[in-house]
Length: 602
Image (cartoon, rainbow, N blue to C red):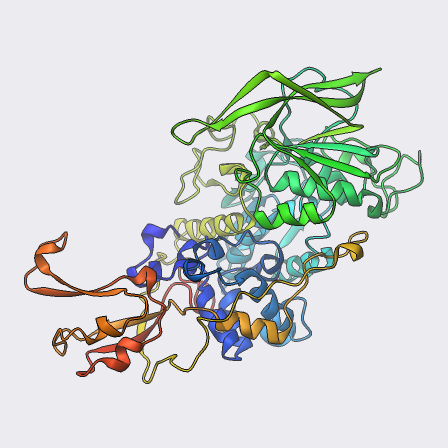
């Protein structure tokens, strides 16, 4: 659901509006503060079938939007989600009890949907469509469901057992799965259109982009996404001791930190010719450009980025964690030439970068070719972008966008072929996990409407008066952000998960910091005498009385204005009002306890 589709009070909850699946993070954070962890879990899980995964690796756009960040630092929303999923999610002992609270009974609609791609977008679509009563078949090219959650996100960030449990809960709804089934070689798009009433293309962007520079085809040049896919599938990748990663995004961080851990992925003995762990899996199941090798375990990893330290697109947390683990950064350098000897990499020659963006803020790097330096390297990993295998759709496939993705309507996900939809990276290029989940949910709603289901519409929402609301005795505005616990650097051995969960005390204190933006000051215009006492008492100066002539819209008389962006919901104005014209109401709408957009759930 787009921000523009939200009603005023939903849009006035910044964390909800920023979340692609419109989870009301404020509601579940407040529930944690109040000790109601079950309500918190249900609020976090109902809009998101990957709540447990997102509690570990979500990009957390809700935190970027959090109003508490204006005061000091945003709420650690992602870590708080993990806190409640550890108690009630797929990883918890109480999973069986909470699962029964999530959904209404099944309705069999006797319609069939085929979904190509078992990543987060495809699985989210399968989840919702199955709940809506459709027979769903999921076609996955590899031998593992999960897509980039399994193949791209390193294990030290996301425990594989957790992903497997999250996926098993979805498949357990009654979804048919055909693994090792590639679009094109094993089943065509025409076959799928005949077999099913609707088709969803959720292919993912699993092909890495290269660089058109001398030496780019040398032995020892890897593409980051393919390097991560192969390492995460257990294939041995030769990287030597000195690794240079080119790029400034999160994939570059993952590639660099994975290179430091490569020896921990359980490779076979040198020269065995087989990947580790599953009885001789054939290498051809990996992407075609993947590389195998004889050993792994880099001792020196350097990231080279066009951007300065402040310009890098990677998350600040990821950059800091990479530094703690010994990754070296070289900023404002661009790849110029890969040095080789006997066809193998020996280094990367770079040139200086004078600017990365033009006057309009668009990416347009400029270089100083007189400023040249060479880094020694055994391997160069290119983290410069990913692409979609659109050729797999065949000559009769849907239209392709100028970006090389499947052209789709941004609202309905419909392609140029009737009954065929595209979601996730296949349609929009590489994005965050939560964006893929939102696409899957959106396409399920669109297919449901096309096949005769009830028209989806946002929940009307309810404003519930809250008698006696005040936080006068709370110290919520003085509690500093609680640091999310991480494994000490010296204990980051092998594939151990680096980020740890909050303790109960830490979670309660962090949750207490929430400003509760879902609470809204209400004004009874008939009772207000414009005395101005609320303006005088407001500690953040967000209330004001102005002449109507000063307002940008036509009005008469005098107006009482509230700047929502700065209100900390202290309720001092309500306490001070002599005529009880002010009160507090708690809003429950799109992101509370319903899946309004798809019409699914409680």
